[in-house]
Image 1: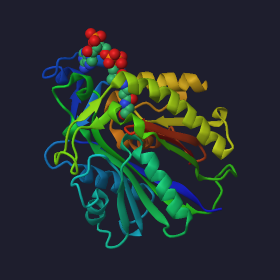
Image 2: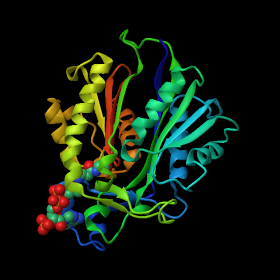
Image 3: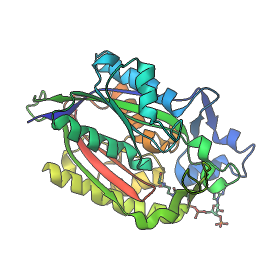
Image 4: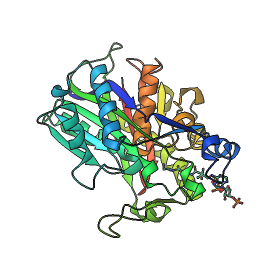
Length: 324
Ligand code: UT7
């Protein structure tokens, strides 16, 4: 059977790294409150010239190099973002041009914090349909540009960054004889919850970009339930169970959500990749950024069974089971 095998990962962060203490110089907050409520210690903030597409390009280039490919080998780019460089064209086409790829299919996917999971599902279906062979799947965001810096309940929570994977259509077994690649993806959306997490602007309504608004406590409650149930659903689809997981790479919104979700599934917290302390919530970038971190530091190795999961605005949520 043809599977989409992850053959390379990459990530990129803006140069400027901002600590909670630095933030507290201009926002009515404290390092203590942020660490205790969220686990966040640092976030990266994009400076002049650093955009969603530039970060996506850097992450993509690193993923392509890790896969041992040339950029021109890529025939599909799917970029998950809620903060594109322009309303149109898709930032994926900017990435394509920056990578020097003369022809491929390139488009953006919008599912906010779950965007990378949606992008993986779309790319996986296109690869397995046989229309493409090498996909660059990216999550990239510059949420600092849509934050209300007067709203301490949201502005301390988010950061900028990008993560990417190369997915190749392959028919092969891994070292341990088990099938490699994307084994199952389960996605959900429930548009009734728009008002709990949204941006108060848009080209077709206000004609402005708008700012992020969130009722954090309500989102938190939904997150733990939705994430634990969708992880179980994705494992069931793959014919596996939680005891077989080597690593969980979750959306990095809040350390308390990561702990509570792991506890609900009876997972060893030591199997959960945590980067929220270093990157804060980078929306669609958060899962591939954390994934690249754990691949590059040697935690995730060939043969490992990894579950990716995310939940965010919409609401949207999802999980993917991937054998490396
Ligand atoms: O990526 C999409 C998914 N997003 C999420 O998963 C976010 C989910 N939600 C959360 O992570 C948490 O709900 C928050 C971190 C946003 C908030 O934590 P909380 O424990 O739910 O706090 P709270 O909203 O109930 O606020 C508690 C108190 C309030 O003061 P009072 O009313 O109790 O006097 C807030 O005004 O903390 C206050 N507060 C702050 N204090 C210092 C809120 N923000 C801050 C702040 N610094 N930055």
